[in-house]
Length: 147
Image 1 (tube, rainbow, N blue to C red):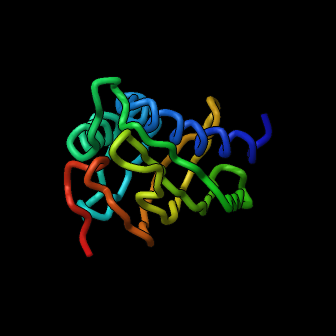
Image 2: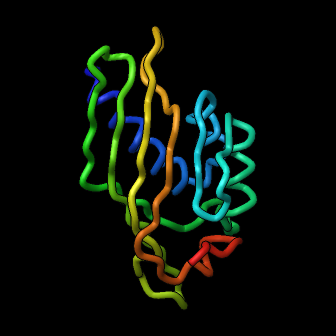
Image 3: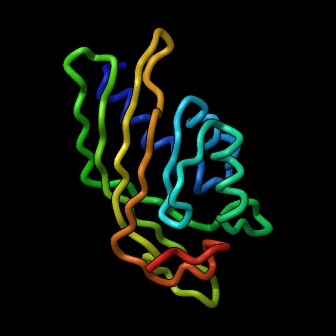
């Protein structure tokens, strides 16, 4: 797999894991990295902190998932000149629906990511979440976002 596809695979894997409610899997994606979420202010480092952040902040239903669909778009990936690091900027839109909650986009924004590479391949080193449009998150998050 080429560098671009290796990084793209990580981006799409994140969306699959969160929609599946696999917060331990998301933690493993960030085992050597960190996430800075808007509600927290400080970064969450490593697998256990990232997993705990999702478990504490994201609602899961009886089916075990948050009943969402994360869509990634406008992906730009830049590989560093030494080919050992990379950056990605991408948009995200999260959709949600229930019998009493019509299908709608509940939040949109961008992720700003950094990646590193070793002999095992690419991995997340940092993610900054930057929401730009906030809708009805009452059925998705267990916390309120600032602003």
